[in-house]
Length: 63
Image 1: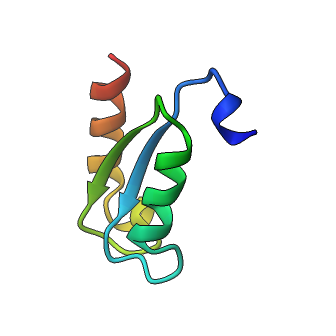
Image 2 (image 1 turned 180 degrees about the vertical axis):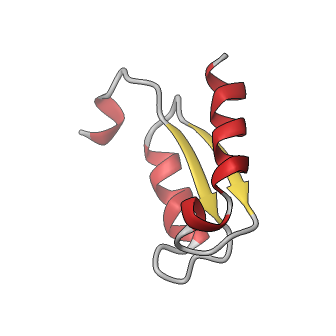
Image 3 (image 1 turned 60 degrees about the vertical axis):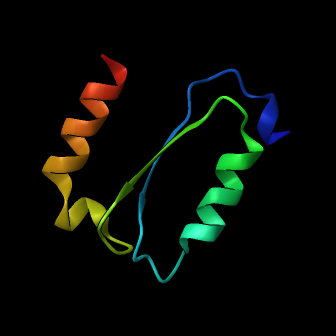
């Protein structure tokens, strides 16, 4: 069912996340064939520590 979505999906993942590990996220990414992936050198609350980087990346990604 997850791979049935036609919406754009872009994962921005904290590589040091100890709650949802990189492997866990990559499995989700693998389930959605058209999804894209970006890693940030951050932990679980990457929006708190790397907010500006995430915003810049998302804006670049969506054009």
